[in-house]
Amino acid sequence: MRIALGLDLADKKCAAYAVPVGKAKKAQREFLDGFNKDFRRVPTTKEDLQRMVDVLKDESDGIHVLIENSTITHKVYWLLVGMGCEVLVAQSADLFRITESVTKNDDNDAMELAAYMRRRLNGEDEFRTVVMTPPEIMAKKMFIRAIYVDKTYLSECKKRLRFRLKVMGADLRREYKDISCERSLTQLRERRGIRTCATRSPSSERPSLASRMGRGTSRRCSRTTPISISL
Image 1 (cartoon, rainbow, N blue to C red):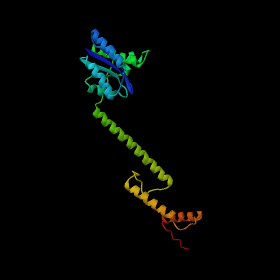
Image 2 (cartoon, rainbow, N blue to C red):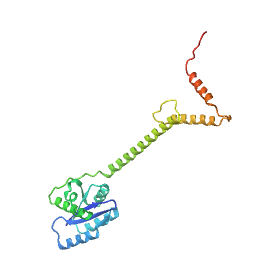
Image 3 (cartoon, rainbow, N blue to C red):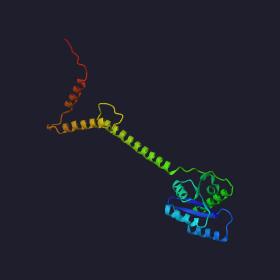
Image 4 (tube, helix red, strand yellow):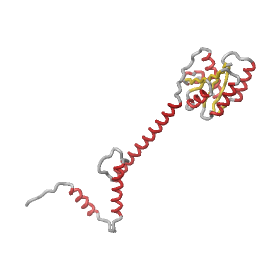
């Protein structure tokens, strides 16, 4: 007996419903009725899915599973494939008996998925399928995505550091593309050392505004070319 199994997936548990693909004997129908009662809700862990598949394997010649595309479909798909099941992932938009159902719940969705799978095995083509990415390629995609997130965060930190330095007036001798490079950090440490020495000077009197303006003027004038005036 070949079995069509519909799984309505959720984050922690899934609703399961199994039907025979062709004609089934009374004992086989009773077995499936008992299975549908015992495995009405199945946790989406490897151990629980394996236990469900082992129960069906004892009474079937093949297990054909239909699931919808969701957030945990990739994980469940490759778990079931590794257990020897034939698994199809359906486009949710094509399953009109589910999307347009008036009495929509997990149990009815699992029953409809099993019925969709049985009709497909009997020659009807009612929905499109989704190709699942192999686990190796998915792991690489997740790794690249993590690197991209880290680089984006690092770039944002560098921008904030550059803006902070400009607000504090700590201009560097040159414009660095990477504000966190070795030369940039060296110059920042040097400027920090100069400011620390200036704050720890022995003079306790605070310079007046005029003297500070005078020093700034002399500093600016020192950069200009001297002009000689003859009388």
